[in-house]
Length: 187
Ligand SMILES: Cc1cc2nc3c(=O)[nH]c(=O)nc-3n(C[C@H](O)[C@H](O)[C@H](O)COP(=O)(O)O)c2cc1C
Image 1 (cartoon, rainbow, N blue to C red):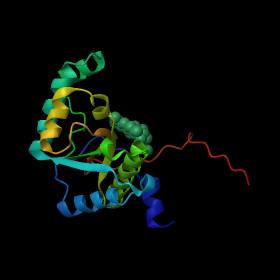
Image 2 (cartoon, rainbow, N blue to C red):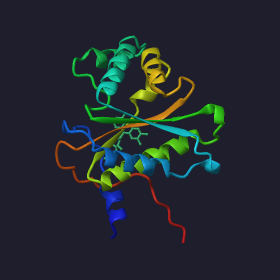
Image 3 (cartoon, rainbow, N blue to C red):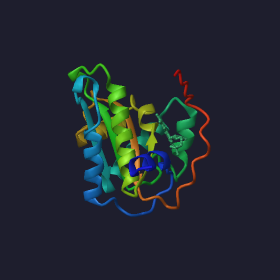
């Protein structure tokens, strides 16, 4: 097997990170790999926003405020926990959003392949990641979006998905045998 196939088969979602920043050169490589993802009709209508450090703490505070006001008891209870951290305390967090004014027909598909490209690039560089859906669930809420708007992720963008990024706190668990995503070979 080659390195690419090995990376594809060994990548795992990681939910505990070391308290160590992602080196800028590696972060830039990962972002470029996201940018290089295929897109419907080559529209390239997504935005990739990365937050680290103070800005990430600011987002966490804003999202906590939203979650505490949520109609969903799950979010209210989660946010009441002093350890609430929807990106697992990762040192970097990447959000992929789509600009509807550019009318992409395939915003979800485009965003998903960008995220997968970046997760695989991260794994190939010895970093770890996890797709984070929480931000999509709090998407319509106010504080988090207002905070992101101020930072340059416009309110009118649709958030497609996001991912935590950092160094794994421990060795990756081996992948259990795959049972889903059935393959039907008609040969
Ligand atoms: C669309 C999507 C949403 C996901 N959302 C979350 C999430 O919000 N939190 C989380 O911990 N993992 C999330 N995951 C990661 C999955 O739980 C994970 O990929 C799955 O359990 C398989 O594990 P693996 O990635 O280690 O192979 C998400 C994955 C996908 C593709």
